[in-house]
Length: 232
Ligand SMILES: *C/C=C(C)/C=C/C=C(C)/C=C/C1=C(C)CCCC1(C)C
Image (spheres, helix red, strand yellow):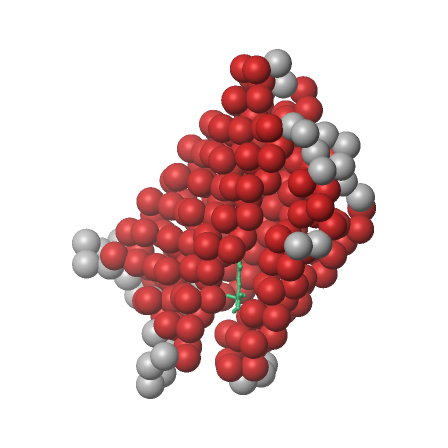
């Protein structure tokens, strides 16, 4: 067994780069949490918690990949199971910062998340047919999209008059629709499109997705918080 990262192991390199990117982002979000106005501080710090949790998992995932060439399936899903609900907390906090949120919004987003991740995990781990897992996962995702685009969360955002909150909420809509679509694309390419499983494609696409949806997602919240703080 060989534990060294090899120059031709591009997936391993992507694990490495993103694990370090998560560490750097964590430092950045925690420090910047001090320089935004009070009602944004928790949101920016929660973005830092998301990248912190991911950083720890990425160190383990990288080792699994580099030493075995296998998908770090369990670490990947434990990471998602912790970080995606935290991102749902973000949605809620951004609405709550302007007093527009009800707890029901958070619970519905959480239920959609759990259906999405349980479906994906069972399909990837082979407990159920990968096509069935994919369909269940997509169903959970559609439920989240409905809540964010048309449900109570959308109405709460529309009725608020805070510009900073509106721009943060709009950007988050793009993240859960376009940014998150990278994950099912990875699953499809990894399990459903070819003759057998393709762990290399699966993992570099998931790694790219995490880069966009954890680091860029946090930066969007940070940018909205900064702009809003400058106005106040
Ligand atoms: C930080 C981690 C994040 C934001 C992870 C998000 C994961 C998804 C949006 C996964 C979605 C999936 C589907 C929509 C269908 C197939 C199975 C999944 C779990 C890959």
